[in-house]
Each structure stands twice: as structure tokens, then as C-alpha cells.
Image (cartoon, rainbow, N blue to C red; front, side, top):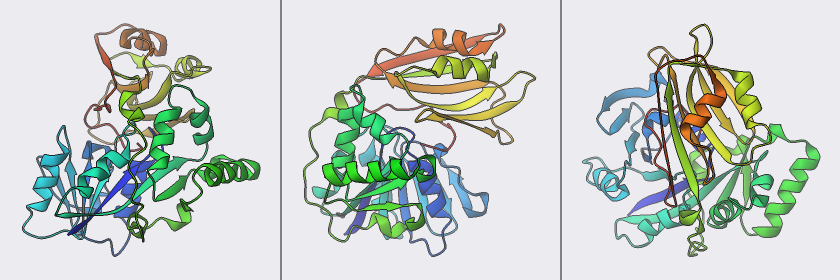
Length: 319
């Protein structure tokens, strides 16, 4: 049987970034990595071998496959491969219960459950666990873990680290905690994966909304920060922002942090963002009006759902 692992964690915890870093490690096993959209993974060009349809082949023997709307179909493509993989890894959606994904391996004769790694944003997790809108979703993700990967420890001080460790040890006492220094693919092979059923289906019913924004107008960083300050209904923003003067930058927002990076050659020269938040998130056109300046044609769509959100293709790395 093929070992089957899941990487989970809330929106913006750093799952995609972790995968990309691990892919660049020497002696990476021959992996099949299934993601909601492999365009999210900023794969180092030195690793690329071929890109075809829903699959990216890497020169270290690994592949990245897009799940799209059908995990079963993506798994079928991998299991039917003429060359077997040493392990299959699924990156769960940021609002999904990773235990439900692991159920696929628990009932399959071809897959062996090999552990759930849940990525924890050290600077945001305690606030998330107190947020009445998302606490059940986040807690359900944590309860499924075989290991916690504590990300962004540098964003909190010593007292914050002690508080985080105490809270996780109290509520999830049998789940080991590892951090950035321990990052390795071996984290995805739990020595003894816990034989537990996921705790409820709260994540599937949480009232999440997504808004897709496309505009030629310039995004104003100060207006964006002012719009975000004091809000509790926005959990994730990612995409490209066209700034005044025509420059385009990648934008990432999660855990109350905004990150700007230069856009790569060939990326959109307009504002193209996905905003994910609570069920009472403002309409897409209202968001655009609040954070952009100027007048131009635009497109703004969005929807609310209880099921995990399927995000727009080709958003940048960082989920």
C-alpha cells in the first residue's frame, strides 16, 4: 500500500510555503502532492521538468497534481501511474477538516494512513481559537493532527511562546509539536498515526465567504490597511495588486499581517485578489470601492458556502 499523508491548517497558516520549501530539500522521496490548485505552489524553476494539464513533473521524481473538484479522480491518476510513488501527500483546503480527507485512506485497500500534519500560525492561533466564527473549524483541524508544525514563531515573544505551548499541551496533550528547525518530509510519516475519527463536521458548516476581485484601478495600501484595521470578518487575502504608477505586487494577508512581494514576469498587470472571510463579509464591489482609487472597468464576484472554498486559479504561494 502507498502511504497517504495530509497537511492541514487554517487559511494563511503556511501550508503551501512549507510544501515548497520541503520540495527543495535534498533526498526528497518520490512524492505525489495533491493540492487544490498547484498554481499556489511557487516551485523553484530548477526543479521543474514538465508541465502538462493538471500535473507538474519535477526532476526529483515528484509530481504535483491539481485536485480540482474531485479528490478521487486525482488519486486515481496518481495510483494508475506506471511508476509507483513512495508517498501521497494532500494539502487540505484552509477551511477543511483534514481528518475527513484521511478517511479516504482509511477505507482504501491501496492507501495506508501515514499521518496528518497541521500547520499552526503561532501569531494567530490563540486569537483564532477565541473567535466565535472560526473557533470550531480551527479546533476540529487541530484535533485531527498527529503532529503540529508551529510556524512563524518569530512573530511572538517568549511569553507568547510559553502561552501557546501551554494551550496546545493542555487541549491536545498527546500531539507532539515541531517547528521550523525540524522541517522535513519525515514529519508526514507519523510513527503511529492516531486511529481516531474526526471530531464532528463543524468545518464543513462554517459560514465562510469568498470574494473574487478584478480591477484596473490602483490598490491603495493605506486604504487597504485602514479597511482591515479593527475588522474581524476577513481571514485571508491573496493575489496581485496594481499600485499607483502601474507597478504590480503580490499581496498576502493572514493573521493580521500584510506582505508585499514583487510580481514575477508574466503575472497580471491589474488588481486580481481573492478575499476569504465570514458569512457577513462585504460585497465584492464594496471591498473594491474601499481599497482602490481611480475609475476603471472591474469585475467583482463572490459567494458564501458551508463547504470548503474553491479558490481562483493561479493565486500566489502562501496558503
